[in-house]
Length: 410
Image (cartoon, rainbow, N blue to C red; front, side, top):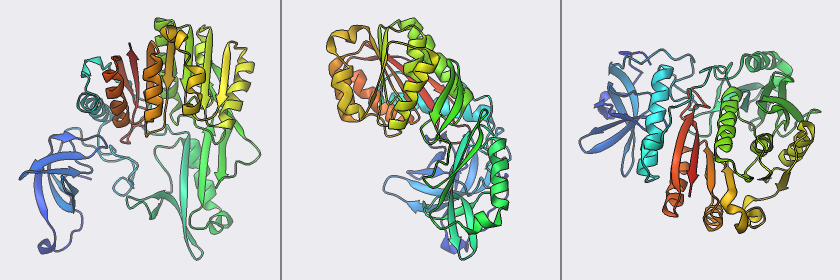
């Protein structure tokens, strides 16, 4: 939103407006202000700005407010690259320079580690930016909403129900937006959409753009991705990072840490297609094992190990909780490094308890959710682990999310 430009508002007698000084930007990207004993969260507000806002929801301990006008703009405020920035909940920093966004996220990570993780932020390494702040995503999923012959294809709004039309997404790679334009130009295909339908567009340089409707993968079930250890085949619907250049930076950092730690065993939990397991073997680790619930991911991992000529690996398909006793033999833990890359919700209590009981020498924890990472670090710290390093990798520029790699040791 440009400074000094008001949004349409209701009659002043029916709205609660307030002028606020933004003193922080919280995890999630909202500006934070304190006024008359209340904490306000304002989407689109930047650190150091004075704004006028309208109260949207009063909660027990805070207030959600809508940005109406920027009275004193930050020098880092810019025009959003996306015309949908005001309505799309996916982006949190379209209005900010990328340098300011990266510094904001770095400060958020340090704050979370101290407040929730109960560890010093001195462990933080300099943040790693994305080479591209736009056009980096290799995958997007769009939702359909139909009314008669008229269909809308786009993202889900802030209410988690409505769908707003997305002609193009600046975060997606140009190949994906080109394919999306062709798809939207097809009257037959658009008219065939029903409310609740989804279309996923996935791109790799080797395979081009793969379009998937609903749960259908089409004839091609695996795609080729380029990594520092070689080209890997991954399931077309399986997990793979959406920002490949940054994912490769993370992989290179993990390999550098493995070279420094020099473990005899690596246990890779939530391994997906086994990238870190394969990398451990590539680095000369004597024995490595990957565990994941994805059967297609584990099949791909086996094939990639054969293709790359790697030995001393094992892959287990199933819940991590069920495999812990098998992959964490107590006698081997003094020379074992465990790599965990869990979903956004973090590690379950059962997995944390199993790791604490087994006492591996080192844990490398990769997370896309800094809040649950900090929560889990607190439990490991209480059990005798020291966080040696934590580093932000900006896997998701312009959004509220980022990737963090934390190294803990006993």
